[in-house]
Length: 359
Image (cartoon, rainbow, N blue to C red; front, side, top):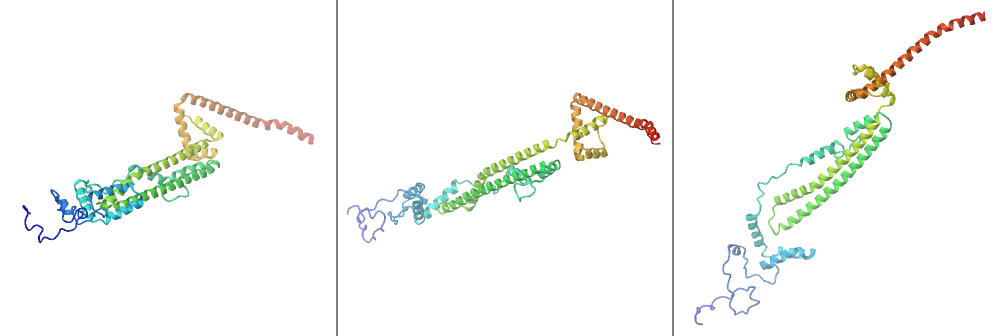
């Protein structure tokens, strides 16, 4: 034929079968090749004509479309589609392209800190829960501070012992509820992180994901979950503080001294108003009379001196009242002594008369 090389078609082996062979007759001319082949096209053989189009994932555009449609498919269909993708001959090239894209666009995590500093608020809450006996090993006596306050209250009357037992029971309920909710939180956090790890490991077969990136994602997830843990510990600490405040308020109400003890202490205070600082021997004597401890006597006198200075007018009236009371008691004591001293002299004549009558 004119204009053609006489050797064209003669002695030349036929072209290999391609995905165009099923659509064109054998003698038809081949379609022109792409205008320009990029290095990535040649490297990953994206225009390989030896691939059968009837097989899935053999066309790049079709591969991308089918991958994007996995999210809208059922679980079984998605698994079948993933299996077909893993068996595709284009998968290595696809993976290599993603690696190159990631190297150009991904955030560099080399300079990011491996471990973030612990949350100071969480550490503070943990220390408080440990001090109150909520976190850590269970203690039969509760916290040291609450046990000390409960023992001090129990030394006043028998009702405080019952109140202490009620306090410990409620504290135990708070502890059980805290550990139950904490176990649920840890289980949910572990389940979610395990699911994410499995998902990322499965995706790492199709896109580049390093183990370090998986670990960092787990750390981010646990950081998100820590807000739930913070809220749980915060509410638990608030419950403990409310319980302690109620217990201590009730204990303060029961700590009011008896009327007799208050009278004894006030009498000593106003009788020694020039120097209302009892000695240790006097404190021990007052504690014995009032059936209280020496420290309680010291605290009472300290508070009394403060109240006296703040309200000097009312305190002066109270001082006059106790002064008159002491004067009356002293007068009654003198009158009684006189009657006792006069009674033997009055009985002497009567005794003499009786003795004479007997004679």
